[in-house]
Length: 66
Image (cartoon, rainbow, N blue to C red):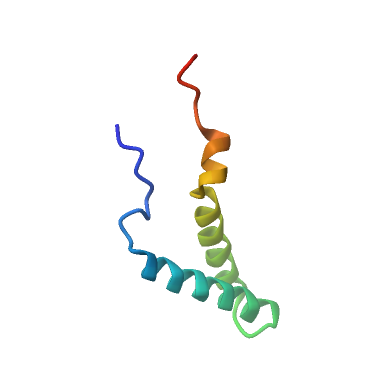
């Protein structure tokens, strides 16, 4: 069973580009320049990126001692 995350195959440059686009989408939505649906996609992307951080993954890590 692989513990690979859905976006692990993307290189860091692509991830940084999408992160930047995500932030721009949030700012644009908050200033009423983009529709609300764009904010939803941006929030989903941000949650995925936060979830895959080492800190959050350590919170969900299963102990092998059990």
